Structures are given as structure tokens and as C-alpha cells.
Length: 544
Image (cartoon, rainbow, N blue to C red; front, side, top):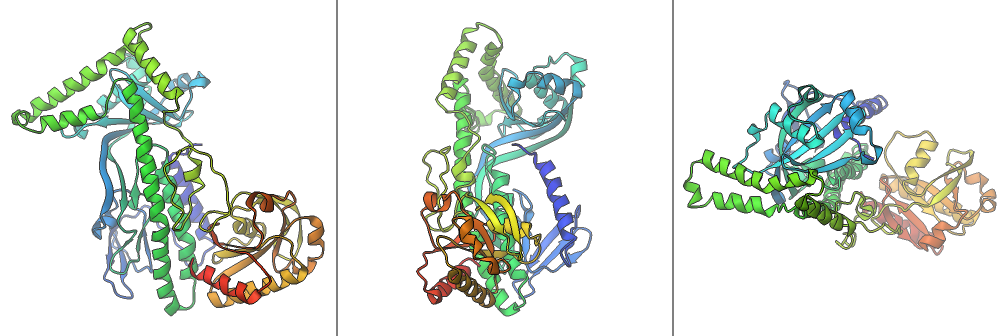
């Protein structure tokens, strides 16, 4: 599905305000601008100053202040990559109920994205909410011979009307379009050189502040959410520690791990987004519009002898050239027009070969991982994702049945996924607060003594590693669980009654999962509990 960023931001704010009610000392401050972040490198290094004159002294600053991130710029963190792919005007507009109804009348033509090519407009419409009439239009322009200030309200309304098929001389229809905002922006493909800024390295970049992609494929906000998912449990775990000396070293280490894990993912998503953007340009080429031509024209008009021509004359010349290039697109609207029919044939052929813009990228969306061997090769960008149990990747989806959630009581069999099993069990136990928890899972044929010794080992590791670990036993059937009543208050017991874990993933042993659901360690188990304890400690330490 598709969720507009402004609506998603409102949902996040509401969720944050609700969560803050159950966290001691938590305060949500909304609608206040940050003036500057100060980091002098000392132990109490950080200060956040607001434009209202307030001052905060946090342990960590998480800078999620957008692609132009004033925080990142103030610490002179460079962005690496391609800073200018295309200049665009973003027009946020709303259609009247009557026009929205007309646009929705043909259900076969209702989509999220509409790429429009006609003699008056080349652009992309994004439908955020058809019923509410919420739209955005993206229009490319070419500096310096086309500038953002020429896109006035009247001009962009004409472009919107041309794009959705309303006659420009239809005064009553013009009232059906309400332009809300007009904003220029620059499409880029960049990743911050470092996600940790300032002398203390405790100013942490997340989301668009850390990376900027072309929107093709929808990886910008999703990559930012993954950043937060990776960082939040680390901060919560370390900032809740009572050992301030250990915590200083541990916090620096965990922030470095955040950067080492997330930056490669951002780089591969940036490359994919550029490939997706180029796919949209290939469709334009099928309409005999080549994105290289405006760039070549800009270069030619910026060099002698044309550079000696007054700027306003060159701007008019550029506009004339653009109009000449798009004028033949008018043939698309005329039935039987040879040029228009040729374009339609080109586009159909290209889309028929799968050369359009796909919207699903399973390997990148759910198959990403952390570690030296986790980078995804280019291959087939839209290839299916085949789950596997591997250190650094998320626990795969295996349907399991809960016998006991670890609260001391048996449960009616409830089905849930191995993915994010720790969080699901905590919700089932209605214990969603507190510090994040690792999950140690014992799989395969296990005796009562195995389970008891396993829980003791995990308890010992928890006490000495400053990390809470939940224990889970995955058993093959109900009969295997019958003899484990006495451990129901110490660990969760779930059933793999279909045998999917062993047959699909070919693993029996101990799985150590992080609070974010990624696999921290895989330990084949041979009954050596001392060695198991050592390996669990290492697994915890290497992921904190």
C-alpha cells in the first residue's frame, strides 16, 4: 500500500505521545525548531539549543532533520555520490469531491503513480488519497535556463489541468483544483560519509539526513525506518544501563556498529534507486524524449559563443527547444496519428519486456542483512526473496504455535511468525515496556534436562552481559511439550508442528536473535554447556 509521508508523520507523533506516557521522564516536544547543536568533545559534550531559548543536554542527539539536515551541515559531514540528478518542482494539490469522483469513475485506471507525457506537460502524478483528492505532481525543470520562481500558482494549476485532461479555458473546472504548496527540490543519490558527527561522535544521522535517493521504488522513507529500527534498541539498551563507566565505552561501540551496519544498506538502496530512476527515463525515450538532450543543451548554451548571448534570450531559446521536443506528443491524443501510434507501440513493447518501473523489490525490502557477506549484488532487482537462516539477516517467516508465552501459564494455541518472535511474545505477555531483550531459541529434539540447563546458561549470560535474554524452546509437537510444565514460567514454548524450521531451514541448535529480529549467532549444540555459554557471551558482545 501507499501512505503519504505527512499522514505517516501524524501517526508516528500520536504513537510517540502515547508511548511517552508509560516511560518515566519521557517528554515529546513538538512544533519547536532547533537553532543549533553544540558538541565540544567533552564528557558532557552535547547541547541542543532551540529558537525559543530552551536548552537541552542529552547523551545522544539523533538528527532526523531531512535531506538538507542543518545539523549535518553544521558539523561539515560531506554527502558522497551524485548530488544533482534532476531539479524538480513538487506541487501538492487537492481536487474537489466532484473531480475526485470523476477521476475514480473508472476503477481500472486508478493507480498510485501516473507518468504523463503530452505536449503541455511531462511529469509524474502521485495519488496519495483519491477519495480525499490528495495529490502531488512532480515536474522536472532545467537550471539555469529554467528556474523555480517561474512556477507560480497559476502556472502549476495549468500544468495540473493539462495533466488530468481539463481544458484550460474551463473556468468552472479550474475551481476543482486547489494548489496547496509549490516547492522546488533536487533529486540526488547520496550517502553521508559518516553517520556519526561532532567531536564526541554522539550526533547520529538517521533517515534523509544520512542518505538521499531518487523516489523511484520508495526506498527513502523505508530505509529511514530501518535506520530507526536498528538504532532505537541499541540506545534504549545502553542508556538504561546503571554502569556509567562501561556505558560510555559501550555507547560509542554501539553507535559505531549502527553506522557499520546501516551505511552499506543505504549505499545499495541508493544504487537501486538510481537504476529505477533510469528505468523511468527509458520509458521517456520510448516517447522520443531523451533526458540527455536537455543536459547537452544546457552545456552548449553555457559555453561560448552562446554564453555571450543575454541570459533572458537564452532562457527563451531553451523554452522554445523544449516545446519543440514535446510538441509531437500531441499526436498521442489523436486517434490514428502515425507519430502517436508509433509512441504507443514503443511504450507497449518496452513495458511488455518488463522494462518499466517495478514496485516490488523483495530482496531489498525484506532480504537485507548486516555483516561482511550481506551486500546484495545487482542481479535481478525484482527477484523473489527466499528466506534463509543466516547471521545478520532477519529471522525468516516460519509459522509457529505458542503453547506457553513464558508467563507461567499455558496458552490456547496461537499462531505467529518466527520473524520478530521476541517482540510478539512480549506483546502476548503484555510486557511491552522495559529495556530491549535478546531471544535465545533452542530448536530440535530437546529433553527436559536440555531445557533446564539451557535456561540456566542463558540466565548466567544475562547477569554478566548487562543484556536481558528471553528463552524460547521450539518443539516438534504437542507431545514433546507435555513434559515441560515446570519450565512454563521460565521460558516460552512453541511448536513447529509442520516441521518447517527443520525442513526449510535445515538447522538444529541455538539461535540468538537481537531485539530487532536479526540473527546474532547460530550455534549448533552438542551438549557442551560451558562452550555454549562462552559463545552466547561473544554473540551478545559483538552485537551491542
